[in-house]
Amino acid sequence: MFTAARSLRSAVSRTGHYAGLPRSTIARNMNSKVNGPVIGIDLGTTNSCVSVMQGKDSVVIENAEGQRTTPSVVAFTKHGERLVGLPAKRQAVVNPTNTVFAFKRLIGRQFKDKEVQGDIKHL
Image (tube, rainbow, N blue to C red):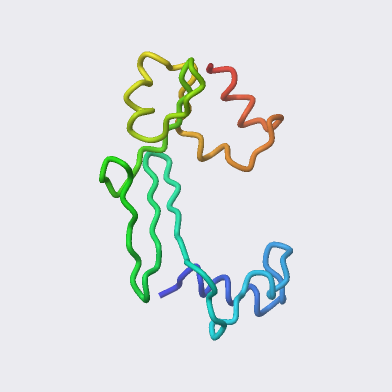
């Protein structure tokens, strides 16, 4: 089976670099000890999820509503309060100009990027 990890390993072993980064930057010695907690964040377009390693098991952290996933929505109220997840999603109908969603594809882009400028035209 051809996996992304195998592809990355072979690309790094051939050149010593991957995407302009030296191997030492992207490869960690698997025998080294991890100091502190290890968390994983799944930033999804619709929902997001956070987990923490406990021993050799991954445990998903529940949100304030007791759910394992949180809607990827953020809103700001007229009083300056920041809402995240389900509360933000619920108020989106009455506060659409201060509610942000489906922003994952814009992360890491500059304001002048064609993609960002195209989205601004639809606001």
